[in-house]
Amino acid sequence: MPIIVNLDVMLAKRKLKLKELSEKVGVSTVNLSILKQGKVKAIRFTTLDAICLALDCQPGDILEYVE
Amino acid sequence: MKTLKHISVAFLIMLISGLSSYYLKPNNPIMMTFLFLIVGFFFFNLILRKSLSFKSYFTSRYNLFTTKVRTEKSYDIPKELMFEKIIEVINHSDFKLVETDENKFEILAISKITFKSWGENLYINFETKGNETIMKFCSSTLFQMYSWGKNEKNYDNLLNEIESSLIV
Image (tube, rainbow over the protein chains, first blue to last red):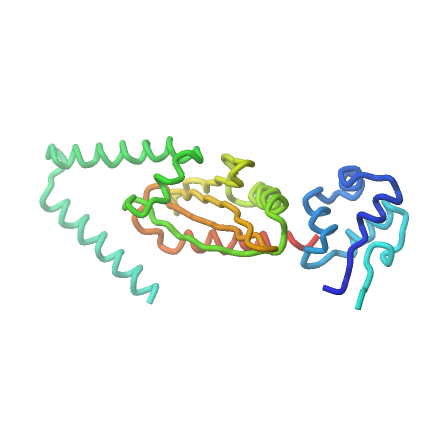
């Protein structure tokens, strides 16, 4: 899939662990791990909103389209 | 075809129960022994069902007292993650998680015994094939020679829950 999830990059920049993000966002660590690997079927706007709020970033920082 | 199969089994059950009540009276020792064996066997299975160690007993093709439905589904998610994911899905489903084996990547979940169902054991294990994880389901009835399609229905429900849980 040409959409790459840069969640691990943002986590490293914010010096946050996946578990900490999971607690802030209210999404299980398993789901975040699957999202991080870009294996989810879809992402809800509410989840994206919560992640952006927790990581203080834009959706484009997390999702990237690569040709 | 499936309906015809269900009707045939229902007819056979009615025929057997009709013949047995005609030939065997309630105080007949054969009837009493037979009933005692059935009840005993039911409780025996009820005790054994809550352990992964007896998986082969329930899923064996030679065990004629359980109905087995085997299916496979592949996902492009690593085995370790898929294992955790299925545990999460089962915890939010009608199934009850009984035992997990992290080393063998095996899961045992059971469904409750209700007026509609005698209960079901769901054995799940995972295998890696290239980049894909193959999830193998084996659904076995607790004490039923014919499942009336309930196993398939439960399996479909669980698959739907897995699919919807992949939307985060």
